[in-house]
Length: 305
Image 1 (cartoon, rainbow, N blue to C red):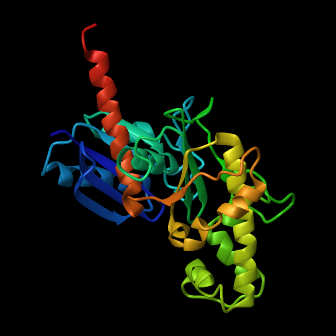
Image 2: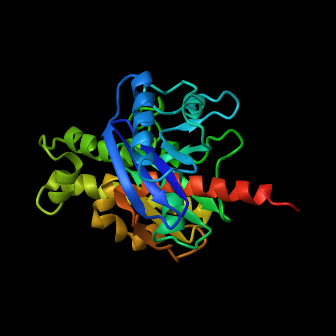
Image 3: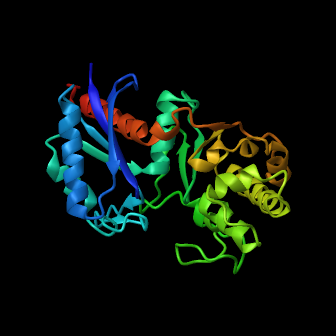
């Protein structure tokens, strides 16, 4: 059976999984993300060597923060990974391995994972949201991942919800990410006078029923979330939304159909909103799905006509 390696490269940790063609994780290795670019590349090389001892992989897929600029090859929009942001990361990784290597944004890999192996299997119009430290999105439209003319799409987390609102890490103000990411929910709670909580955003949700400040911040968050999702329905008309990231653990996000319908344009039918079945494994499984697709395309193109 064919095996591939799927990498999930994040700001705090790197995971790599040896995956078979049916999406089974045969083995996983992980470590903290090294702060130096050279050490990160060396760690990836060591992980592949470890996993290859069990089965020789036919290809490698990488779930990455940000995206590779098609005109320059440089990794961009990855502020949480400064050691590789702005570098030719794709070329660096390809130089390490005598195998086909492919790359995609982490939110796109969430969608790839769920469409091939998870709750969205067989669907052709899917929006995936990663709601954690930031707010990322991946969109499958007509069976194809949306990438845009310059490989920048989609980034609805940097559409503006509030003119001249809270500052965002991207440099603008009022972005959806500045209100709806897990980091932003906790920051808004503290700004409103909430107590310092060791468990951060998770604790804010836990206090929703007993803490008036938490109740106010969560109510505002859910209303902004409803508006945001309604906007995505207007833009992409998906069959399903899939949620990943830390906030996807909160049941309240799956109970907002009435609020979303109130803001939706042209329909009162809200697509189902589901938690990613693969959970924290969705990054490496989506990367593995991408590697398997690469092999399938290569096999098709090499067949005699």
